[in-house]
Amino acid sequence: MARDKSRLVELGVKDPSTSMWYHIVVAPHARSTKDVRLVKVREPITVRFPSTLLDKARGVRAERESLNDLVVAAVEHEVSRREGLRAYDAILRLREEVEAGSGLQPDSTSLIRALRDGSERHT
Image 1 (cartoon, rainbow, N blue to C red):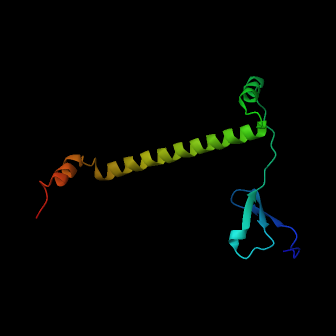
Image 2 (cartoon, rainbow, N blue to C red):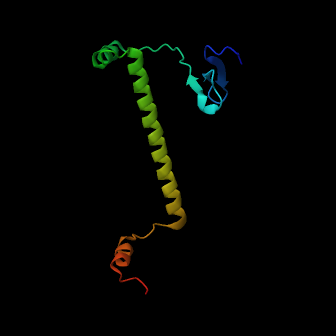
Image 3 (cartoon, rainbow, N blue to C red):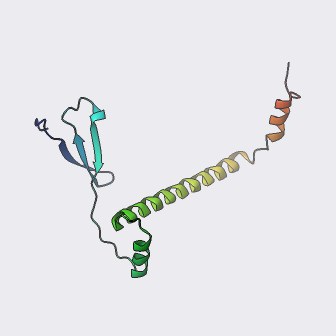
């Protein structure tokens, strides 16, 4: 690591599990891991859009928003949505497994109400 205290020290690191490159940015005064930032490196890609979709995208973006920022936000939103759907599907599969193993559990609403009213309490 460089000893120059006048600027930040950057080090490139590749995450083997995702093949994504990161920059580790260390402040000159760094004394703990709180002073270290991990910054994702943007990867340039080529995307081919239908011209009608590209025209629509240009029409809906904010005044100071780049087309790149709009596409990044859209992809982040779609990834988040798909991860949510995947989690929901996993919950449904787990629910079916539990139901198959132990059967449908009875509704406990009446028991809870009885306990609240005191009719099922033991004194």
